Amino acid sequence: MGSSYRGGPIPWHLSDSMSKALHRLQVKVACQNLKIPETLALSDVTVYNSQKPVDGGGFSDIFRGHWDSGSVCIKKLRVFMRTRNEQESRMMKMFCNEALIWSHLHHPNVLQFLGFDMTSFHPYICMVSPWMENGNVLSYIRENPVSEVDTQRLVCEVSRGLEYIHGRNLVHGDIKGANVVVDASGRACLADFGLAGFAQATQGAYTTETREGSKRWMAPELLNWRIPLRRTQESDVYALGCVCLEVSRSLGCVLHLL
Image (tube, rainbow, N blue to C red; front, side):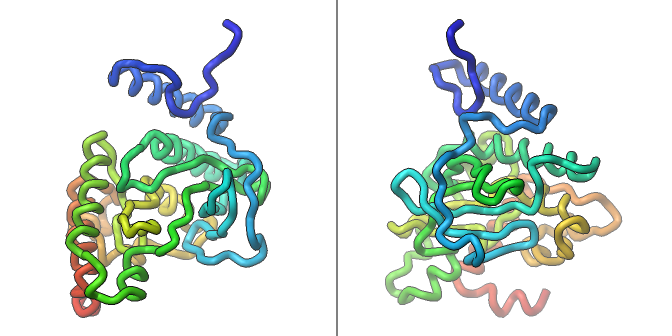
């Protein structure tokens, strides 16, 4: 054969079961070797201001940039490409698994994953996705007149994105208003798919955060500190209900009671 398959989306037509089997194999190989498929490594990514992130969280910093004639969001993760110890190796495997799964999700209400930027902040890894001009759904609602925001449509779009994820037997794990972004046309998309577990694994190594930060969106069974934290599709649905309250601007008073 003159060429070989290097990862990324399956480049030919296969049955759904065969495509899923190949994807599982790709994820397994990538995780075992701590190597990201070449087809998901982006080149010529430009960071507008590498010294000043526009936002940040417990395990990443957010920068705005440019790639392939469009604005992109560059999420710089606080984990190295070259792991130095067992904990970092475990986090890298988890990251590879979640990112490769995200790369195979294609739905209008799930934020598209474009690939990895391996050079802009070397040796740190960056995840690249389209830049959402309207920010997250909460800022979108705050910055626009209530009469011009169709909250029912936004909630339905988030629900359709979650239905798609669950239909693939996956769990989002961190649904909240801050992880629902809105594109230039006003369409809602679920972001940060699968990264809740990775964020949890980085605690103590790169952050001082605990699951307290997302407690307000957690199903009651996840708040039992005596058992391991295990997110499920059912806990996703509970969190979706909390997002519905956020979007309807009713959550503000409820949160203070939790």
